[in-house]
Image (cartoon, rainbow, N blue to C red; front, side, top):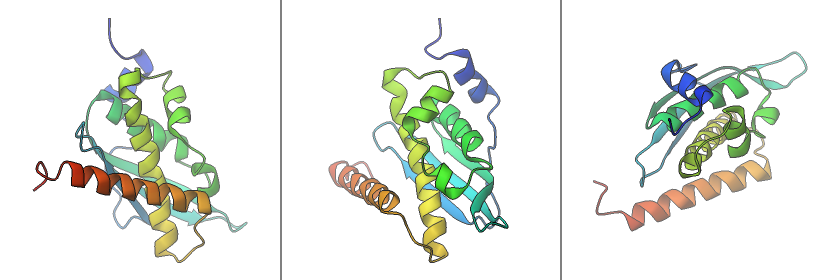
Length: 159
């Protein structure tokens, strides 16, 4: 019996949207120093005729476990073709649910995937001097603060 369901294993064995994007419009880089997972998520954005920004292409590079790779694959499937506003609503729960669930011990991977997407959107909006919604700013600040706390706590391990 596997720890993971068949949908998770399918995304792990045949990941979607893996790789990088040359000259991305936004990049989200996140990691978890405790488990060692690292995700880099790249987005290419196109403005529609109605003025909405749409995620035209999205790719990722992930160093991590089955759940890390599967959640990276799923978040890219979910976000591709969405407007920035829609993609900002993708959270850990929607990623895990779309995969048919994750073991509790692996739910942090869905958080990382959601954070990588949020950070890529934040990077895109920042670079283009666009308004950053309060919710996204709070999320970015929290990600940065958590990173600083972990780096301080585990400074002996980081060199």
